[in-house]
Length: 169
Image 1: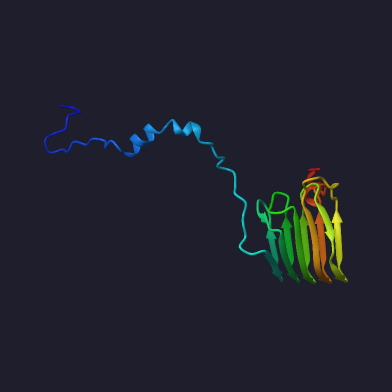
Image 2: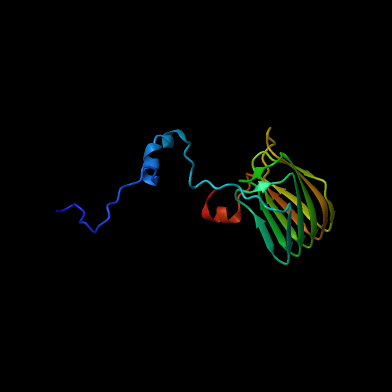
């Protein structure tokens, strides 16, 4: 009597609309649907259009969404904005800086145009290794006030000290 149920054992039949039957019936649909990359990461969308660092460091990097207007405050701190993998909502981005004895470091993608409209007092604005402007590339306009602060914009051709030491250039 192997394989036959005894009288006290309930017989189990797969319902016709069970998950397995539904999956089998619609298996052909799998071939039509686009396959997504499980390693792909959706860009990060921040709730606020401002970044502030007081006596510390604040950083945005990787795949994040750059709004058309961004406010950056740095007081005795550092703000790091890496836009090389970012998604731009607009190709014209205004970054309003308020910097008191702080630093702002910005990494931009290839071909980005930088326009400096800041007011400075004892401060520096440095543009390092920017590539020539390209059509369809973002334009960043820097506005605001810097007092004893520093803003450094790194272009795509910039090689970090770490990369130089490791021979990655």
